[in-house]
Structure formats: structure tokens, C-alpha cells
Length: 56
Image (cartoon, rainbow, N blue to C red; front, side, top):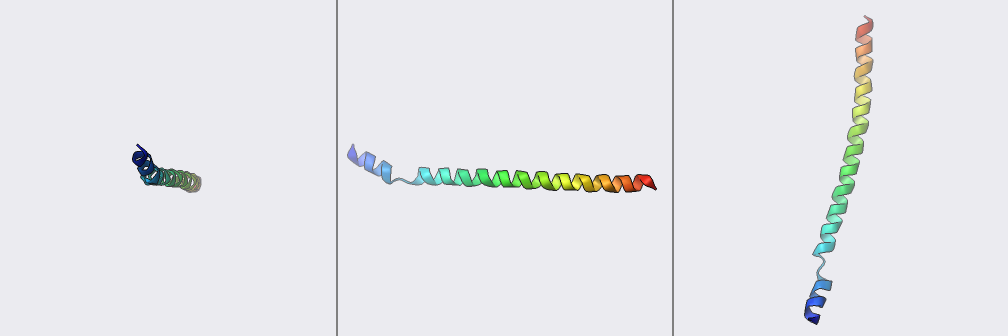
């Protein structure tokens, strides 16, 4: 039984999986934020172009 516990304590694959999950979550938040920012800027640019073309 002690061998089982000592092997379980030395096993770090669960901690590695959690770290990869946290990194993936952080990257997804960064990507979503960047896409929303670029989308807002792009939308305002297209609105400005549309307004400029409508004025002619």
C-alpha cells in the first residue's frame, strides 16, 4: 500500500495536465480579447468608409 502512495505522489502527469489546461485557457482568453478588439476597430473602419461613400 505504501508503494502505491509513494508512486502516486511521485507521479506528476496530473500536474502537467493541469498546467497545460491553464495555459490553454489563458491563450483562449488572449485570443478572444484580441479578436474582439480587432473586430471593433474593423467595424468602425467599415462604418467610416460607408459614411464617406454615402456622402458622395
